[in-house]
Length: 265
Image (cartoon, rainbow, N blue to C red):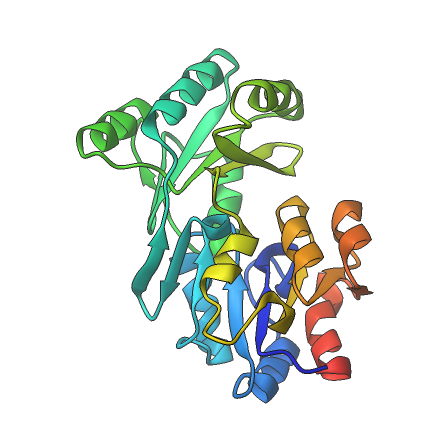
């Protein structure tokens, strides 16, 4: 196989642990990075992606953050799209009624009103620390400064996430993309952003999606895996991801991405 660009999701895919790449993965990336652009594609904020570029020696390559809402290359913003403040405020009112907490993300800023088990897990997994500020204060400040969120993280229990999922579908599906990360988390992104659109935006003259191989595991990877030249899902991935992939490799904890690179690239 010969592809010009390799795009990979991070959590549950490229990362064999919660927050780092294995030596095996580093060795396989090093073997192909001079002939293949390695693009990390994630729902994470930029600094939680760039620290992973360093050990692989791919700092010169672009990153696709926040599910495609923010694209950067060597510290420069290539594309930025945020959630309209009116939608954010409307969603916040609904979440308040259902005791669902907000995490707000913009560029490398992560704001939460208080710490929690979920926040502490995020700190560990992404090696980023939030600023603590009431959500109302953040939204008022951003509204005054005409700013918007690149990502909103909804945090609650399974019951509240189940309940609000139907609300999101009814009232916000036309204005925001909503991804269920797990039983207790839902990620909100700008409607017109996606991992696939992010990949399309970094293609150079003469390149097409057929030149791209992509790896993923979750709902927000399905469109990417289905549409690029070759999609590979990890064995621990959602069935929806595995069903559209061209190939299923080993689990992330078994270095499935690295093993596929070794065997086929």
